[in-house]
Image (cartoon, rainbow, N blue to C red; front, side, top):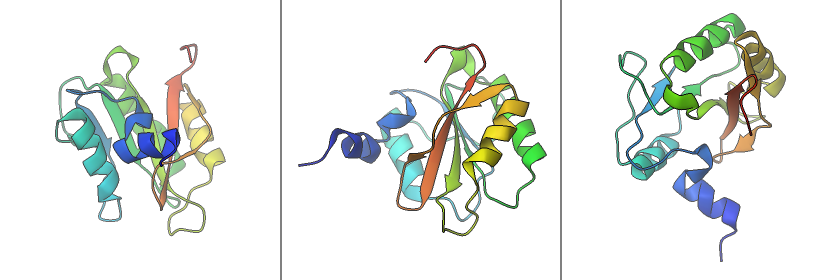
Length: 141
């Protein structure tokens, strides 16, 4: 028997994306967890679009690693939020502690604050990756 959290994680429901949503991913590289990508695509029924997509989107994931420029992360958050319709879910995905490229949650929180966002507590989304949900200052939940 699976726990509710495990079931949500298995189905990518914790992201808050829905069937038919267009989800944009930023800073993709060959180290990303393709199982996360596949779960999001299965949930939405849509392929992920890259940062060159030029229409509004329903959700965003940003793959970010330690060693990337914190100011760049703030800029990417601002750019991603600008195309995000109706305050849809925005997530920063980072390697978990002890994995190559692991980023501290305080670094992500600092970049989020600079971009005008609040960062939630990291959530385990796979064996090697955490997700941090961002929300614009003053937005509910």
